[in-house]
Amino acid sequence: MITGYLDQLSVGQRHVTRGRTITETDLVTFAMFTGDWHPLHTDTEYAAQDPRFGQRIAHGALVLSVGLGLVEFWPPAMKAFYGADKLRFVAPTFIGDTIHVETEIVDIVRRDDGDGVVASSFVVSKSDGTPCLVATLKCLVAAG
Image 1 (cartoon, rainbow, N blue to C red):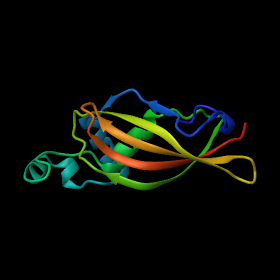
Image 2: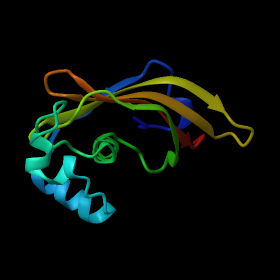
Image 3: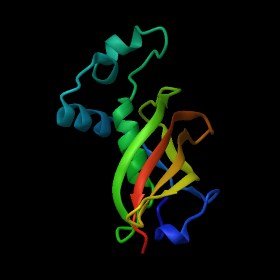
């Protein structure tokens, strides 16, 4: 996603990541780390009774975290994660789903200090192409 200094990036640049399968261990570890033990994530019997999902679902923040881990951020250029706009969880992610991320730079705003804020569309999708998370991510990028 951020693979170069500000002047090396341009609106329209796209990137597709490798895939990663969401596991039982991911859900349990995330629940332990965050303290989010909502039964839709951690209780098989409870989740099976939910008419929308019928099974356990991954935490939305877990899907976002895994998605961020899949994208490339080149350390010399990537100064900071600047924020997320219009973040939506548009479909559930289940144990066993393999997800990947597609990004496209949609805006670059140079700051007075020479660095810039790069906005990218950020779509986490399942292997069948179903989007499960959509957002616009912003990163503070070094001028070079």
